[in-house]
Every structure is written in C-alpha cells, then in structure tokens.
Length: 197
Ligand SMILES: Nc1nc2c(ncn2[C@@H]2O[C@H](COP(=O)(O)OP(=O)(O)OP(=O)(O)O)[C@@H](O)[C@H]2O)c(=O)[nH]1
Ligand SMILES: [Zn+2]
Image (cartoon, rainbow, N blue to C red; front, side):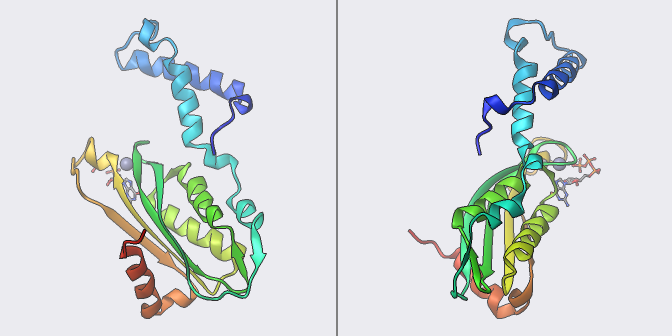
C-alpha cells in the first residue's frame, strides 16, 4: 500500500503546499526557517498518503481474489491494525478491526480483507461508518451467508484535546445474515478474545 512517489499528483501537492505554508504562518511560525522549509511538502505528501483510500476501490480488491470454494464455516481475520483520521478534527484514531464472514460458495484471499480495512481507514472517517462500510463491501462483493465487523479504537481527539481521556476505547460492531443469531455472534466474539499463536 506504499504510495509510489512516481504517482504523486504534482498539481495537488503544489496546491496543498501553498495552504500548509499559510497555516504555518497563521499558527505563528516562520515557514521560511530551515526546519520548516520542506514541511509543507512533507505534510502534503503525508496527508495524501493518509487519505489514499479515496483513490482505491475496495470491491475491486475483493473481486480480484474471489475463489469458488464449498467451505461454509466461519472465516475470521482478527487483530487487523489500522490508523484512520476522524473527520471532525482530522486527528488519528487507531486500533484493531476484526472481521468474520461465512462463505456462500465464494471465499476471498485473506490479505484482501485487511486491504479493505486499509482502504476505508485511509479516508476521513467516523468509526461507525467505517464499520458499516467494511461490512457492506464484503456483503455486496462475496454475498456470504453473513458478515460481522468489530472495531476497537482509541481516538486522539479525545486524548490530546477536548475531554482528554487517555484510556477510553470505543467499540463498534455491525453484522448481516447469520450473525443476526446471538449464538453466531457469540462464537465470533469468543474467537476474537481467544489468544492464539
Ligand atoms: N460517533 C463518533 N464520534 C466521534 C468520532 N471521532 C470523533 N468523534 C466525536 O465527534 C464529536 C464532535 O463534537 P463537537 O461538539 O462538534 O466537537 P468538539 O467541540 O470538538 O467536541 P469535544 O471533542 O467534546 O471537545 C466529539 O464528541 C468527538 O469525540 C467517531 O468516530 N464517531
Ligand atoms: Zn475527532
């Protein structure tokens, strides 16, 4: 998922650099001093990297590795680390995503589930919408018997500023189909909590 520098959109970078230079001045800094001279360019590239998910199609990623397979028990990819940015403050929120689905004739490459999380997290987000988008993307692409997504995250806008709570963790979950049954959700939650390897 590293952005190839050859693919930088020079026009966008140049415009972003102008804005970040202005922001540095407004914050009381001297954008011409040595340590800051390249900062607008660095920040422009960092922000384009952190929002690269806008340029990517998560359904295409899943469809590229969709395999016909009769396996119809739960598949779980847990502890998928992610970093995203809250759309309210443009500050990071970060944590782990856990995804389960029950195939209905088709499976996907395991890494593709993590890639879908990467794509949606590299956009300005709220945790709830990210949870729902991952769920919908998998449901609509693989048409499984059910999909469930659980996300646990810490929000820096609640740690560094505002209410300044360092240890609160937000958990969101969403599901379809077979996960409407409490027993199926329980199986997933137990497997998430179990420590293996
Ligand atoms: N539901 C939800 N809220 C979020 C998320 N990320 C940040 N927020 C919250 O978005 C809210 C924005 O509230 P506002 O009152 O408009 O903004 P604010 O004055 O900066 O709020 P404080 O953070 O309480 O200082 C805050 O309560 C944040 O904690 C998220 O992923 N989901
Ligand atoms: Zn925020």
